[in-house]
Length: 351
Image (cartoon, rainbow, N blue to C red):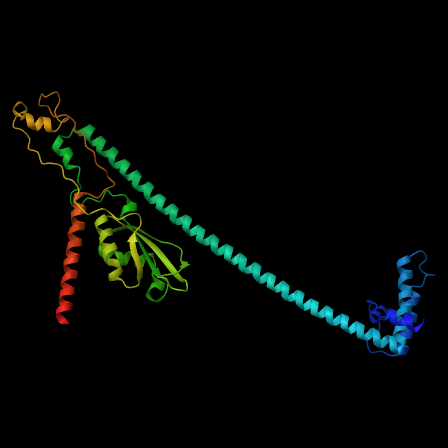
């Protein structure tokens, strides 16, 4: 084979060493010996009609001639070394790319999982709020049915029915649970790291009797405009009385420094002015002597002007705090303001 042909074959992408089954650094005798052994295996006479075997037989001859020619062998070795280095570099690059791809996929899975947990927590919160609202609605309905049943069975008088408008001392509040629920939030660090449902109930029992409590799944969020997010816990406390819930919203954050915020779960009750109170009426000595002005002032109480007392018609909302509850909240608020003013005056005098 001419030197030009050998130089051309020296650029081949085939690995002649592997083809002949010899090591990279080997002698000419080993190359010749390996060629004789391998060529017998792929000789066309032993493999008639097999084109791929015949092609490999000719490739073995080219490999032998290139490796036995010093100049062609040197050129082939350089090309082979460059090709192997490129393959190694490509393999390294593919490995890094594969690792980067896996890292990105893992991060994306983690983000989706975290987002899914946040959505689950939000849905759980919404379900709990709906449950509280529905439970309050059910209780109001049961109370109305009970009142109607009592009126039918006992035939209560007007004054007895009027007294039922307001809850006497010691009776549980008829305000829905959602309106008696307080929401507290704290950072999961320091004293707040171990704050759980039981400790939350113990803390807020200071303000009144508690029906139930719930601590939601922690989530990361920014607090007070801080740059980095913190792990924040959220708890719901359902008080038996809206007066206790009002006291907790007003004083809990000042009492317990670990709480980041304390506020109403639904809406703040309106205590700007006391609820309207029904007028106090005195029963007439006899039906016939009932003053006309008294009868005409309250239509529907007397029937056909005969003096007989009919069933009164009331309009009130069990969703609103009672007069007693509003009064207690207003008194506590006034007392708190008075104490704060005394503290400010004392501090000013000390300066």
